[in-house]
Amino acid sequence: MSTSLQLSDGSSKSLLQYLEPRLRFQLSNQCPALQNIELEVPMHIERLDISEFGVEINRTSYAFQVKTDEEIDQTFDVDEFGMIDYDLVVDQNPDTILLDNRDPSNMHLELSYELQLLQNEYDRIEGLNGNDGIEDIEGLAKAREALEKRKTRYQFKYLKLMAREMGIKSQISIAREPLDQHIRFSINSPDRVPLYEEHLAYNKKIHEAQRSLLEKLFVGRPTICVKSLFIDSCFIVCIPKNMQFKVKHLSLSCNNFDEDLNAIRPLLHVSSFPLESIEVYGKWDSLDPILKTCGVLYFPGGCKIEKLLKLQNFHRKVHVNIFDALKQLPPSVKSWLENRQEIGTEYTFDISNEDQIILFLDEMKESNADRIVDEAELHVKLRMDNSTELYISYDPARDNVGRMKMKFQVQ
Image (spheres, rainbow, N blue to C red):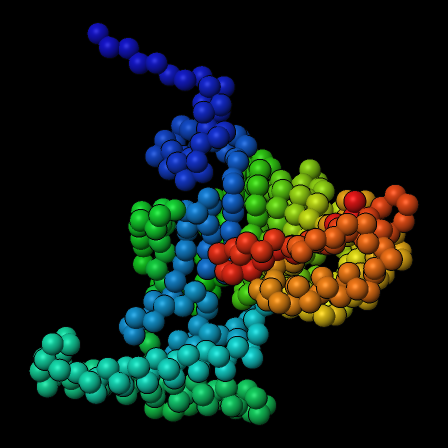
């Protein structure tokens, strides 16, 4: 006689709460009896990446690609000839956060890259021999025919770009054969092992497929705890409004940071604030309270000196990953010395040129000799007033991309 033990709802919820999200989704799909319980249990995610082509949850990717008969994959919406579609009209939906950062100036880069691919294929075909994969005249003719089709499509794309830049509204057409296109949806494990794949009809709206995916995974759940939320909106990203995340670290990769931060505000649960850190990419001008109250501001793509000066009385902790403007910093240091900064203020910079750092430290020592409290080869400590000091130092050890860390700390 066999007996089966069934977990209580409370036990099931305890087990589900910290289970890897991918396994939770699988259990929910395979066990209908668990679906309602699974949706009620808070979800905990270490890292969530949302982009124009899908989602990554703790490095498990749920991704869409536009596949063509030329085996050139795109993660953006494209026209019938495989060119990124900058003219696509995106439907405005009041229940959706729309981030649209399409930049038509990138068409030049796209065409330059495609021209290089055409040249590479031409060189490959011309250098073919019996050991290179095409061993007969018929095969060589097919390769040349395929290349001619790609060249024709390239010419059409170039004409389309010229028409856009010259303001020509009339339809441009040349003898051509549209690409056969479809969407490939795939799920891949953190080590990129394929877990699932499906091919779907392509209706020129990959961003809608991405929105539906987010809705399927997250809508209907209580607040989702996300340690690090990364949103990459360099093209079109559509996010359902009716879901919320409790976030510690936020990264926005986009062309216009101010606009996108304001747009995604409804996604951030009130318990997220103050954020522990924010990564700022793209153009920014406003001094949003979300920025002011966060623990650390990161600028992974660098920060111009005029922006940095704007921050000095706005935020206590700033890190700039790429910085090559040390020569322009002395006026800012002088301002810090004369206009007392808060104790705990810390600005750090990743700098590749060690000679530049040494020259800067020498200048600080020479121009502020009367303020020196302590100095050595790798640091100098300058008196600000009777109770505070500015400690400037650098670590000569280089990181994995060859940069050294320089710090400005108010103690």
